[in-house]
Length: 242
Image 1 (cartoon, rainbow, N blue to C red):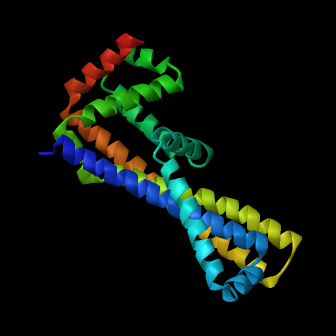
Image 2: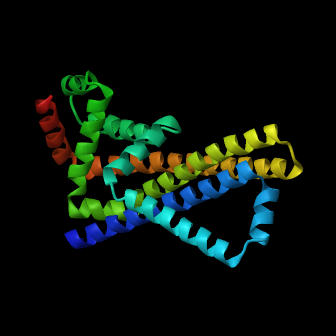
């Protein structure tokens, strides 16, 4: 049986994974931006001729920057808002997932009740879908099934990949600007490599998002099948609040 401590530890692990991914791509973004602005030749010459004191100074500075950035991630609300903003600007899989959940849930209601929820604005519909899903997840057997399907880890992988997409979009702009202003064979090669890795991130993110949508639809249908009465009750409670 899943205890509150086990659930807490599980989500703590997911949070650490999310933050580790964000820190990693933040580091890639900073290093890539420096290379794009300074140029590969300049960076290579600096690294190969760097003195011990300079190496220690750069190492300490890097550690301090990453430490400050990691501490800022402790503000969970900020990180959640960043996720939503990224998803809205790039792929909108979070929105589409909420749409699937609500659409499947509405099938258990009669026509009149369905019309009431359909008349609500998008934000209210999304809030209802999240509320129902959160209430169902409090059931230990349902939560265990969600863990078994790996839906939570699937979302974490999606967020980490979307960090990569965001980072490589910025790096693509930086490296392209550099190659246009100061053309060079090394700069062109760096730009091509950034575009290639960025395109791979986009492809993987779309594949992961589609997998989440497919898994979400299958999960919510199973939940409805085995928890029909409870879901109807929760939905009607939400309708009364509107």
